[in-house]
Length: 321
Image (tube, rainbow, N blue to C red; front, side, top):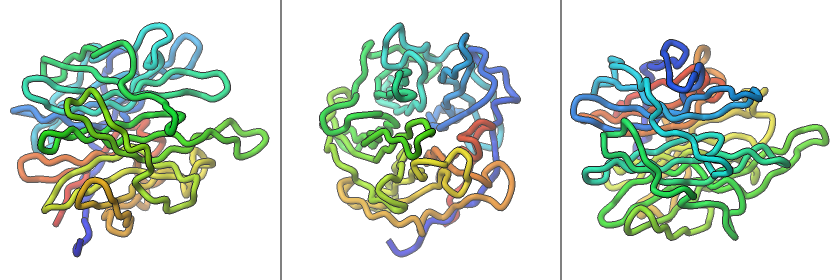
């Protein structure tokens, strides 16, 4: 590739605790994802409420910004997308949501969560469609678009979809196992990044293989891929962490990784070129996670979450070179 990317941090730009969010949500603005409108950038994220038994439910909300990402213009006060019904794959949360303009409609690929008994949760990917620039979405169907299958047995999640030519491409994650790393520990999940393609955004052909190599060890968890095409190269940012101990030991927590490809099939991982790292102190000193790269008015931006998986919001960086 030659030169490595270099990102200039512009700081945290959204704190969910400073806004009145729908559904009684008070904290978390996770996995920010953008939809470009004529006069603004709409940033979708997942926020959380506590239900009647004290467990979290994840809801979709959005915040609007000026197109140079310097001025907040307001947040969604309404329910953008209700959670799924009784027994549905998305009954207990939607996190994340990835939006894609497609003609006169906006497609949103959701990750729906539902609670399990022996492990904490399972996840699948669903499709919803908006006809009002992302203010509200309707489900394409009650069930998931992609879910656990023969070679991807758990946790199909984190879709990122873009259209190149006549083909829709999806990068997503799938779980390889749940494991207890000690006698007393709750089971932890392991997941990897994969790729699928579709002629219509609905019927998907999956490769069913891990496309990004492990850096830490075989139990490395890889999450939330985002891809941008620049100067003939596909650039992928994602986050990765150790499978266990990541909640309490920041050295085992999420960091942002990088890979590049010329054909979307074969990816070369090189985290030395990622061009961003945790800060010495502050909101992103313990972790960086859930990256989202987008282009607007000639600038290339990276949105991401910091400490505590985005409990206190998200920040932004600008590509310098």
